[in-house]
Amino acid sequence: MNKKLLVIDDDPELGKLVETVLKPLDLIIYQAYSGEDGLKQAYTIHPDIVILDIMMPDLDGFNVCSRLRELSSLPILMLTARTNANDILHGFNVGVDDFLRKPFNKNELEARIRALLRRSNNQNNSEISYINGYTDPVLEIDFLSKSVKLQGKIIELSPKEYDLLAYLAREQGKIVSHHQLMREAWGELYVNDSAETSLYIYYLRKKIKDGKHGHQYIRTLWGRGYWFAPRKDDLIP
Image (cartoon, rainbow, N blue to C red):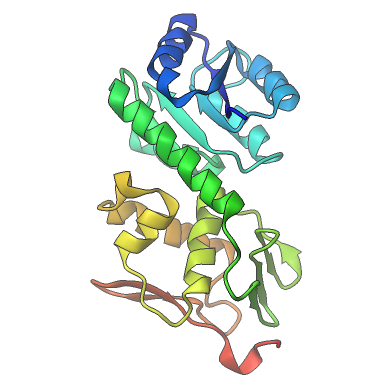
């Protein structure tokens, strides 16, 4: 069955261009011309991937993304002319998976959509590794439900924050490079952007209150990367 792509943008010509560019991917493409309409269509058609603008009538792209994230972890590409640092950080914080600047390169758009779909398929179809999660008296990471709890309470993580934490936890005790983390969460397009990795590690540490419960989970080895340190004395079998 073909994947469903929903384009949420108030420019009909942009939607037509996206449809032409992505024709080789055999996607079923739906168009919405406002934030409200985009949400209504998303609830109805359950798209596999969304392309989203920031500036739109009634609801902007940030609000639409937040609402979509309440329902699904589907890939979201923000295609926008607003790509200053604050907009990008805000977008990632509300759950955007990738950014592309308008006007865009056609080949780059196709490559990014392919990468997002590939990572989504890998997450949905891959077998869970030999461990189902990580648990100690403070932190619980469930790889099956993709949920994280701190002292029994669910922590709201963006999809990328969860991907990074889960990857570190799966590789616990091993040093994981910036390159490996970026490839895991963003794909090959971003493997050299260590600043973005550092930003997300900062977000993660704040959300899991790392170091505030007598233990630091995410450790930094300067110049090499990060590693996840389990609370070995307190692990629950």
